[in-house]
Length: 290
Image (tube, rainbow, N blue to C red; front, side, top):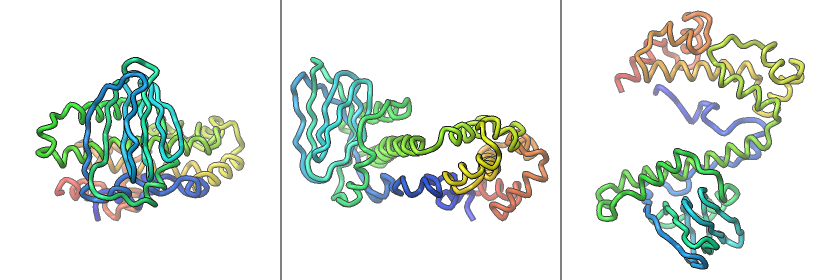
């Protein structure tokens, strides 16, 4: 048994219940497959300049540092203004129209290997478009564009990892935005409170006060959204956080238990055992042995 089975842990998936029907189970890795190659670069375009049209399946991210660009993706048009970033996936045609700013400075990350599956690219279309620039995406794009062209071949695996990281970050953020859009605000507030106060005593009374709802109403609303009640989420999050600290720090087990909101180390040990079929010490030992 590995330290974490991310595929089986619902916390590492998009959600369950009603939300799973609204958000498609897709990732960049599923679209590009193993061995994917990416290229990074940066360019300047003047007002009225055009890049494209490109035909066939295309998958890329563009980070606009200055200026504006209008992106035509399979008949869909969206605009990106600096500083901003966009996930782009097209099956037929892709064209960039720059301006009206005199100089548009763009960094790009493009999938460059093999043929893409049209159906999988089409599944990405709802998540494409402009979004706010996160520090992580900006840093990854800058790192990729700073690589000298003559060492791309030598750093092929590194560039591939960067490309996957950039596109997955954008896709994940877009999925999160869609999740928030269909999540009742009372549920959002409760979930955020749990995540921000994990080590504090949290009871149903506390959560009903945060939500402004009765316990019965909160449970029904939360369960209809995530197919679990809020206290189930609280304890799953505590167990996952505790397991992470076991595997990635040298903190004492009792210290981890109290830091993640357990009243006693014994309670922590019992839930770790239920989840991983290993004691906390055994889980840490397995991870540290590789």
